Image (cartoon, rainbow, N blue to C red; front, side):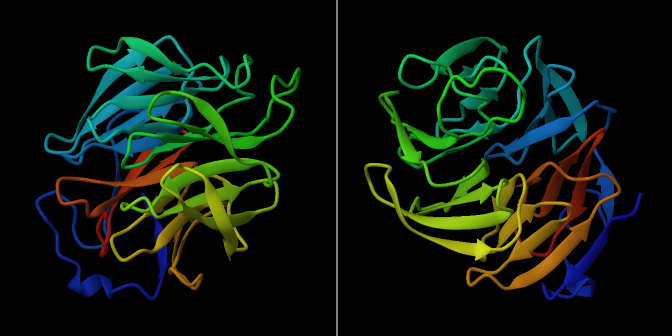
Length: 283
């Protein structure tokens, strides 16, 4: 399996392997074969949860053992995020809600929608340092639209839901900086990626276009580069310069950093999940 990597990140010859079984620049797939992988989210230990939307399953990859275990089955799940306390949050797009999943796979509805109606098709989410959650809510499927607009919502720590953005055409991927100062959102409807300043109350302002590219998931590294999923994976510097690109055998859907050292780029895409040794680590 080959992934094509290009860009001006550090030379692969100086990459340092860290016990994850990958040579510098090497890529492998996680164990298993799936139907439509999405929503990777890393734990503090470097393990990675991911969803199989079509199979209605959620899995956890054990980075130390390179082993995948089923965590939950029976409900279509898209975006995932791990909160500061280790809780796993998940978007259930067909039910239009966000749930919290405990270690036994039991779920609790965390946000059932907005204004007494379910979300359109909640897609991705990011948990901020205060425990609030940003949720993107596009509408891809046919049929009734519960919400009049395709918004980004903010679920406050007290679980009150308020609109955070209404100006994007079709918001999809979302991620924030570790300090919570900035929030990045992909507008799939316009093929652009935006960055916003975040206030303590969760409101977003001073938006600007970081890249004229984007369709799906996002991830940040410790250097502040933003990784954006479209037909390929592209990395952009904080000023918007493209600094790397990864071309996968299958169209990618989302990504995160994983592994014990945070030095593996985990990319979901259709039937497989890729892991690629990477020169820049997780935040």
